[in-house]
Image (cartoon, rainbow, N blue to C red; front, side, top):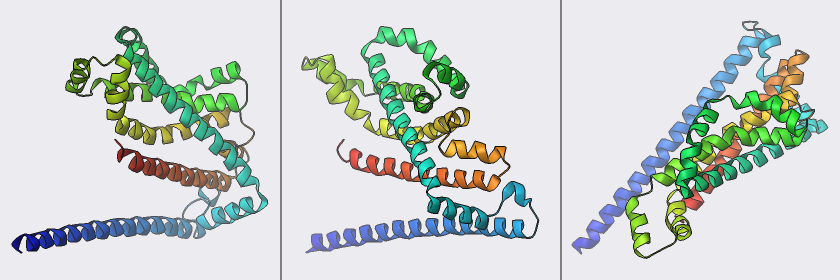
Amino acid sequence: MKQTKDDLSQADLHQTYLRSLKKEKRNVLFVQLIILMSFIGIWEISARNGWIDQLLFSMPSRIFNLLVTRITDGTLITHTSVTLFETVLGFIIGTLAGTILAAVLWWSPFTSKVLDPYLVILNSMPKVALGPILIVGLGPGFTSIIAMGALISVIITTMVVYTAFKEVDANYIKVMQTFQASKRQTFQSVILPACVPTIISTLKVNVGLSWVGVIVGEFLVSKQGLGYLIIYGFQVFNFTLVLMSLFVIAILATIMYKAVEWLETKLVKHF
């Protein structure tokens, strides 16, 4: 009977703890919404009263009206779908290529020693500066833009995932060697499963990097996409169009990030 009371007490404490977590989450969301609404309200009031230049900073109501107009006539959906396709493809290619390259480096210590200084140099280089070279080499189209989105994330993915491979507990590897497991079996059964959380964390970083790479690529060459709208708005001094495009990018990047978080929740349960 005493044990039952203790169990009930622990269950109550657990429920209290869960309720406190939910309350804290609601409070955080409430404060975030207050900050966002205050920012939009101050921006609108400042623009209407001439405290800030409407030509440069526009105003939220004007951006919203343009957003509705562009969605209604279908042009925004076309540009958004182009950019989203390029970003998702660049994101997948960059992450896969970086993970495969990290596996090659783990597999061959000699290759790792040879490529290590080159990876450091490539990581320190501004990848966007390679944009014109990609355009000349791959042509002014989707290929060069997707390559830019992948290139900007592949090196950092390689370095982070390779470091995670090397830091797997050596005792696990010794156990596999005791059972005479091959290198492939060690990688599949120990190294890769142990590094799944790191790979997922890298996906979160690559979300932002892929968007940067694709938007820069569209700045340089594209005739469609949100990057093209930003450049076009800048050229005709339509900063409402520029800010509307940035708003759409922010929304899409947030959705993509949340999708990766959902994927992380599902995968972590299996590893």
